[in-house]
Length: 251
Ligand SMILES: [Zn+2]
Image (cartoon, rainbow, N blue to C red):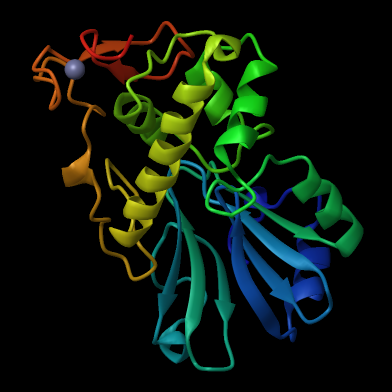
């Protein structure tokens, strides 16, 4: 443990007691968080946020305290000889250690996973009709739907030809079907492309992702829409984040 300030709701000694000597079971993801299940039934949950990256090195034996990457916040020396490290330049990330009851509470507060089969167009429509938020805000709200961040929300709404500022309860069933397909398609293709690197994101082996070259609207303001040729517009008015859309075909 190098930077205790990234721990949440647990002290450094308690965290170390909870993980040292434990065996790693399943490693998965919930929303935008990495979930490492330990043989004790507890889970290490890592929220990378803007600049965090979980990296695996093959040289654990050569690492010593005070050496290596100055942006590392936690390093786990694994029995395999590898080193798992959480690198976080701006330290906006967060690390939790949750017992089974706390994990249940944690996961219950997050919406459905868009890539699971239980997430259907009907389910999406149900999520949307119960809100007055702008549709872009609704699909980015982790309590309603997991894992859709700003880049992919912009891309999915463009693909579905929906104005990001529309009130979500006004989205029709047909539009929900298109938006559902767009979200699933974009997330699946992004994972296949190993993610999107706009600034800091790196894959587990330290390389940039491969999806940024395929973005249709994100950071393309002023450039022609790939579908209708109108210039892509950008606004901060919807949710204070950058929203990119085509004023021609996203109505
Ligand atoms: Zn267009």
